[in-house]
Length: 194
Image 1 (cartoon, rainbow, N blue to C red):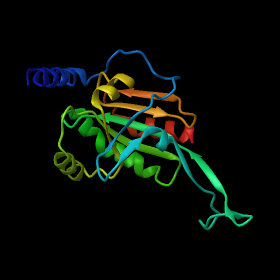
Image 2: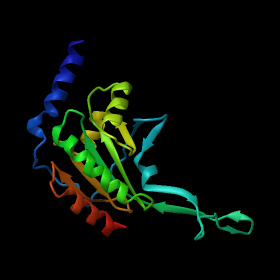
Image 3: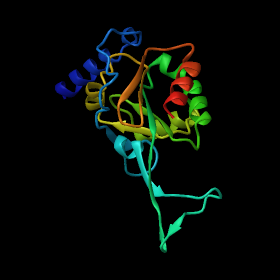
Image 4: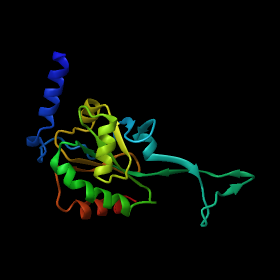
């Protein structure tokens, strides 16, 4: 019990409001995106970063019908730009950022860009997360990874934290802390990577 309480206290301290501001940490830009997976916030199963980065399907014609060659559908791999938005439900700047992030995701719907939320709360029940998603009108995929693993791999030492991964799986841009002009900046970056 003491160990769990100590972990919770340290985790809350780690994600305290003082750390939500900009932080000077080593940049991950230019590095290969570390593997990340976690439970889906809604629905069953796991969400894996590598699956978001490359989607396997079938080539389609201009009408959206599968293309056939020799009686077989032509396979196709789509490489996506992936944007990870690390947040906590107790982070006030993260909450301010949600409507903007949702608008950006809507702008790129149907394009080779996947915008997702990555929750790093220490403990949150499925019911609380479902209520949170409904209240904040989040219609994007959300990953619930192992918090310590996600924080370590992606150097999440301040919130909000956004990581942009290009189609080759390399981290191309990072945002640390709240940005007033996030919509313009992030939209331009994603457009340039498509």
